[in-house]
Length: 98
Length: 325
Image (cartoon, rainbow over all chains, first blue to last red; front, side, top):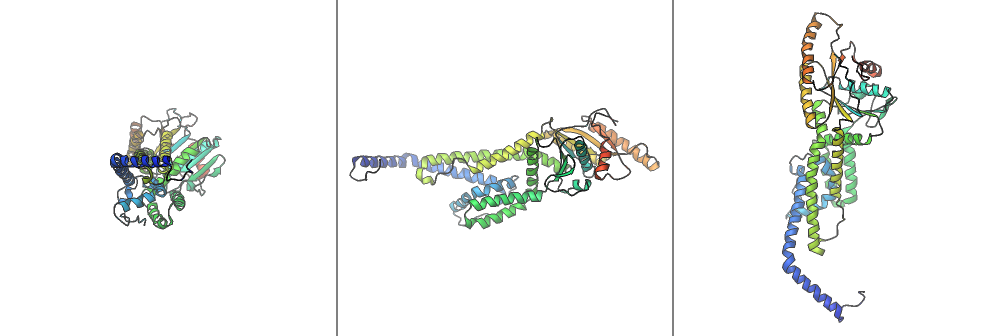
């Protein structure tokens, strides 16, 4: 189907225009929500991290032993988190993931 | 003193009470009796300071060992259990973590291994698995428990931990919903497509199911009975009364109270008469305090109860056939 080369073909030009129009639309209307949703998503993710791994911050966590098994799935996200917070190294003593 | 009530005969029987009152003696004796009646029986010690093996004059491990025909016994080893779990987590880390992170994460996990609560959780884990896996494989599972506080805590964990897990699950669910929304509006900006099932949520749910299952079993009066052992002395009575209240709170069915080491009527002498006089008051206290439950009495013997034969002799005095003593 898409073996036609882009360029002079009228259909691909129309498609490009539509895509451009959609990007303008998204930029105007969806982008603000997108940022808000992203913020909310990250906030909720951090909150989960805090509740599940409160022991890392020195707060007793009765299920610390059971959330241990979640490390393998969450370690990359923890790394993202402190980078996002503007800290090149992990803020939690004893949890220097980098 | 017997009232014709039968001794609680359930699939799962716990023996608990204050330290030194004879929990191990009763648990071993009861398990032996069940095995002698051709019931495939598993005797489990949950006391980190095990004495079950010493009582049976054998050495037990973390895996069931046949002591006499039809009777298997094991002593839960929380340390080994915790190590096993840690190894498991580490193994999964090797598979899923970038090598640059691995060393530090492993260090963190070793810290968690020695943190307070780790062995308690490990012990509970093994305990829950035994409740799960023995069903249908044994006719009787008898628990020789740790002194009161420790055991009440163990039996309350399913409820406490279950609530915490529910909280984590609902938070995680919210994370996933927002993640999906973000992916829908972000398109390529959200990065690689994640798998449909969230491994974190799956792991949490699995835990929760296990807690719920343990709780359902422990509160099932048709399958479970908790038997308290007391001696006619002040502190054991008080401690046991408190424990009964706590088990009620957690809905663990209490099946009866065994009063151990009651002075036999044939022993005489001035000193013993005085002791007996005091004992009468305590026995009266016991009858009043535990009026809601069947009470069984075992006499103080002249010699220690130790080994299979002595145990058998002792527990034949319990009214398992509806006989009274």
